[in-house]
Image: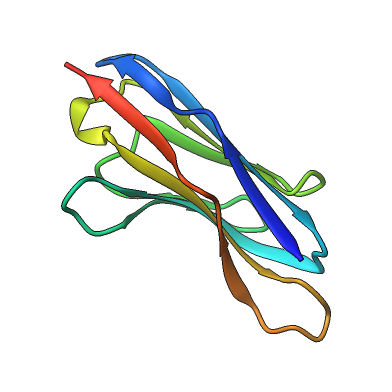
Length: 121
């Protein structure tokens, strides 16, 4: 089985920084893309950032220049460094791993439990 555990998050003032981490463990054959999503109250979950196996990153326009996504393939981890935080960044953040548990398995999405990020004005 695959376990995905997030850490980080919390309460910060506008302009501050937070770092989210996420690790996948268990039976894993290969991890392809890793990503972070977020969901604010009353809104749909939205994609924040993705990073490919080779390290190529893409960001939502709303976070470009402020957030950085990175991954460690050896440790099966993904990190989201969030700087210059704004109140509109307040949301529950979820990490996502697109992986195959075994060589013969199909690719599927595995999610973290979610972590609250609150930015006060």
